[in-house]
Image (cartoon, rainbow, N blue to C red; front, side, top):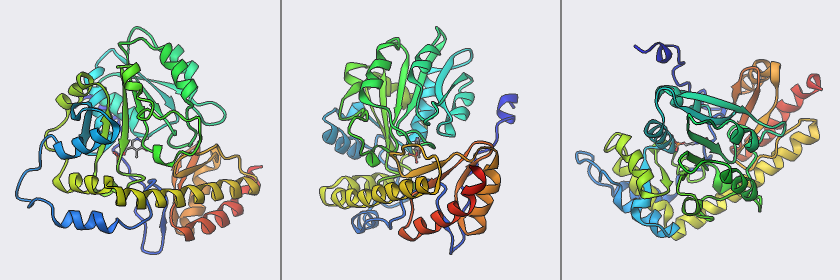
Length: 353
Ligand SMILES: *Cc1c(COP(=O)(O)O)cnc(C)c1O
């Protein structure tokens, strides 16, 4: 075995919750699947047959929605799979991949698996990307940059203007992966939206990633997508494992894009956004310094007290995602979970001041 792989911790999922617990550790959607999605799943291809290897119908639907060709759409079993494919395609031994830190916990591992070297650029004090420092970190060995907006786990967005200024500093042959897993929860008017702004056209080295796991509530089915230039996505298609997107995932995603389903989903997202804003204001009123989250989670900067504070949540049957020595990410979940989170947060806030 490669020593760097043996040294890598296996993926640890947010703790599975007991029946009475709130599971707020994986940024999942708390709502039950839409009836239209369940109905579509019942009519899916028999499972003795392989799925459509190209997920053609889903790529057509996404292409129509975003005004691109089906070849400018790539679908995989979660956008995490696309991150792996793109980094694998772009970077290898001796190459560098730049990303902010702390950010999505999958980034360090996927860079290492590709054999490349990760270059982590610290977040700003407000929990956002330091795009100037990230551009400064680019060398002639940099092959890819991952940009996460809103940033998981802290929540702030990147503005369109800042992203444009950043891209202007990045060589055209460096792949820029814009990870927008939480785009649907963004209400900030100046936030970059890689799809609405078609940044992959003005900058062919940009690929935009989205997922059905968060706002669309299909995390268990594993389906995400990329929009970008056909040639760039061909590289991801070449490194991907064929037939990974199941028929069930494809039909559920297509059903979710239908107008009626989408309208219902948008209402749910609006509910979660309102809950998020309530949670942020109430936590701030308690004295917490909460970054400006535009996603479906909030970040408690608990520092050295992280394990102890996470234990207080656990003991009260609220499963959160602690990052030891740094902070705690809490997903915006069921209505009833909000009050509970606030009670626990209040009980531990004082000694932090
Ligand atoms: C959840 C998440 C993803 C994608 O999840 P999939 O379920 O693999 O689509 C990608 N990036 C970030 C930052 C995420 O938080």
